Length: 156
Image (tube, rainbow, N blue to C red; front, side, top):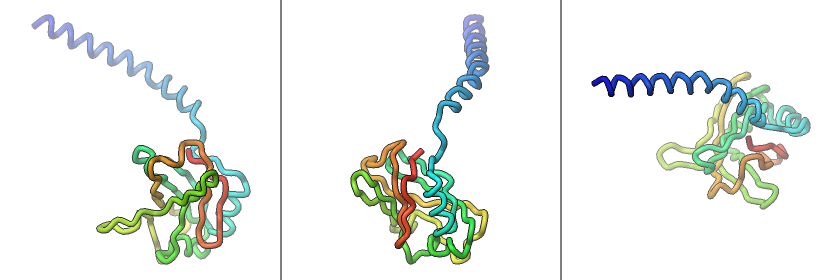
């Protein structure tokens, strides 16, 4: 019994030591990480002026098989087309010319938010299928909707 109590105390003590060291390690890795999305001023201006949105982040998810785009509506009138069910945005890999579309699931529908009346300040999402992890972390992609292209968005 004493052996189990001693082993339990050892596990608890080592856990406390590692927990005390963890915040410093987390701060160090957080400081070394690149920003969530890096976008040149012209890309931000295109998104804002033509689409009425601000791109918040583009992340890889689902083991690299999905690109997760998060954006905030700045101008609901301009963003109406972007949130319309009738137009389908897609990501384009400028290096290979590959087109990443929004998956359309049989029981769920398209994996994107749509709105008849977009709300200013609200953050929306679109998921793009990235088969085989074609687009990698740090790679530049273009967001295309109709005749508007937001170029050189970096996947973070």
